[in-house]
Image (cartoon, rainbow, N blue to C red; front, side):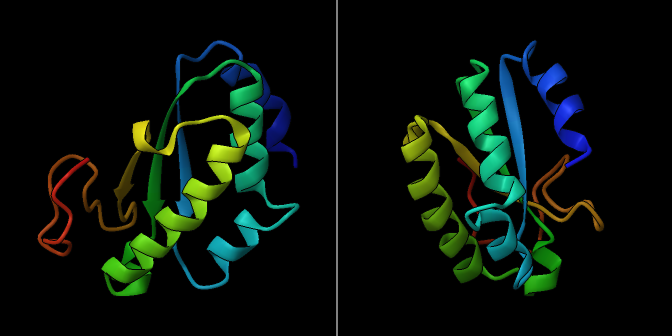
Length: 117
């Protein structure tokens, strides 16, 4: 909750937001839950006028680079962001591993199933 003040300050000047979602079992579910920070940040970004959104699905290494888990997260997140006001078809979902650097600067050999947005 300490991040919200800084998040609001930065977001109020942004044209695009990158929503980083943890893909780990339990982590994603906590963030997307009724009081989760994922929901809160997406809602605040839209409310503050940010109309372009990119969703980075992080920690894909912890899911063994699972395409099924990535697709599950896309489905659940799309349902929520549509309710907020975003068009899920205009939102890029990118699977990444910040720890390993996968899909951060160049395509990852660990996720050959991801062909881009």
